[in-house]
Length: 273
Image (cartoon, rainbow, N blue to C red):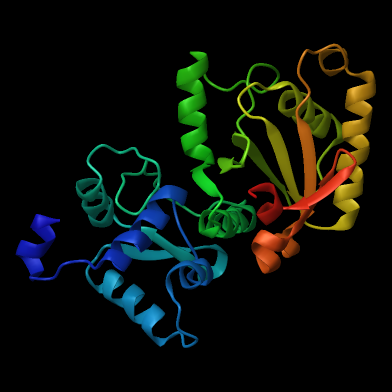
């Protein structure tokens, strides 16, 4: 940061640094989620002014997709260097004054919509008071690889969820795996990941957020089948609880969105009280 200040006489504000952290944690962010997280004003003027300044200072650049479509923003190499200078340890609990693990999204990915929704979900969960930790996928992968002593495998071993977060309840701290499904996939794929999620000791329960009720019904049926027919789950000592919610409900209702599963229903607000 000292180099940036020497070169321009300009210094990033606390909000600027938080915006850069969000991009660093997820590899990118869209204007929608930056506004949701960092702008309290109804007008977009101040929100876009900050992004314009960061772009003019060479710290961020547009993330461009097919046909030149602007999808969002990512850090430049200069922005990465600045963020790392602000967070020299590269780790932390994701509070405003702690370091973060940085991911660089070098190019457009075909899973952009899925990834953008994950940024939105991360914004929702981080803003909720009961959530004390939130790790995006790349950070979960790093930590679980260190814990297990090997990398994630496709057919066996540990499962890396889309995110992992912790909620402080009156009784204890709950570790929750987050899975986002926005497109239907093969039955074999669902059964494999449900088996891994159900028996994992890396978390206490699983939140599955889906695009629509059709997909929710499909996943609930596959979970029932896996529990009844897969020997690795049927005879396992551990069977994590699964709770489902619709993506639009979580993004719009936030802490009041309903999660349903295992014969019960609750909101995130109720879980943390």
